[in-house]
Length: 208
Ligand SMILES: [Zn+2]
Image (cartoon, rainbow, N blue to C red; front, side, top):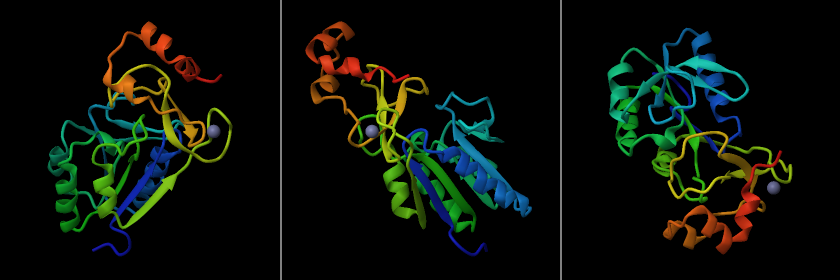
C-alpha cells in the first residue's frame, strides 16, 4: 500500500493551473515507475482525443470515459489514477472512488469547484468531503489583475450549466465576478431583450 495521501483534489476556477498540476503529480509518480492512468470525461471536448492538456502546453495521455463506472474497466493495473475535469463526471464517481481506494490505489482529481453561477459544480463538493488533501488554486483576475481569482465568469449568454469552451469564460476575483441574475436564469429571453432588461450584461464581453 502507498503511504501518504490517498485521495488528493486540485480545485479552483478556470485558468488556475489545475490540469498542469494534475499532470505534474501524475508524471512524478510515473518517474518512480508507478503505473499510472489519467481519465477524462467524454463531455469535455476541448482537448485532443485521448489526451489531457493544460493551457501552458503540458499534455499527457488520457483515457476518455462516457461514465464514471467505465474507469473501473481500465484501472486494474494502475497504482496512481488521475481524474481531470471531474466536475463533468456523474455522481457515481463517488462510489467508483470508494472502490478504487479500497483497491489501495492513489487518486488525484482536478476540476472546477464552482460553476458559472458561483454554485458548487456537479459531484465536486461530495468528492471534497472524501478527499485527504485539497489544494484550491487561484488564478489572476482577467478584469482587475488581482492574484485572487476564484470564480469562473461566463462571458456569453446561456443558462446551461455546462457549456464547454474556453473562449466563453474568464477567471475573475470575487469582487469582479458578476453572477447571472435570477430572472435571467428563469426566463429564457432572446439576447436582445436580455440586453434591454439588464444593460450590465454588455460588460460581460471578454477583456482584451
Ligand atoms: Zn478582479
